[in-house]
Image (cartoon, rainbow, N blue to C red; front, side, top):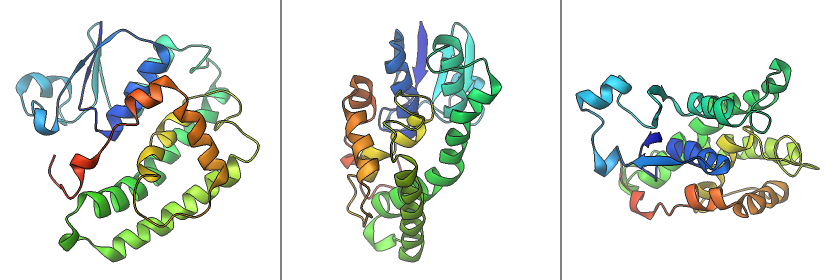
Length: 215
């Protein structure tokens, strides 16, 4: 059985669990990281020398790094739905996955979620937070234009392009921050909430993380 290590409140774990839910894969979830600990043990670091989650074990194939795990699971279990054998077709969703990881995620999760929500009020770096909000406004404005006329990132069906970006929306729309008008992004978010796997694995309350720099 597929094994998954991580804590349910981890954004990177949520991306992986969402895809597992969409694929309907039998799996064993092993709580790890944060209050669960276990990341500094020799056994865990033999799987991932960096000592972070998520990590999966698929019949003795160990994979770490969330986007690599997404690609692995899609190729292994989602061919024809989440994975294509055509390099040009794969590039359509992989470019959005990479953009999310190197642009959107650092601005939102780094500067806003960590800088604003998880940092105690007295320690907040407001210039950094405001820069993050400006960057996110620009990124979500780009997504607003892109989603005009599309139900999901690449058209009518959910693809890997949706998962890393869509996983940010629950937190983005539930923080007390200034947001531009985003009717197309909000409509996409509503559609994602209709998916059982999204509700189960992404829409997880995060109140316990408020003002906590440590897990």
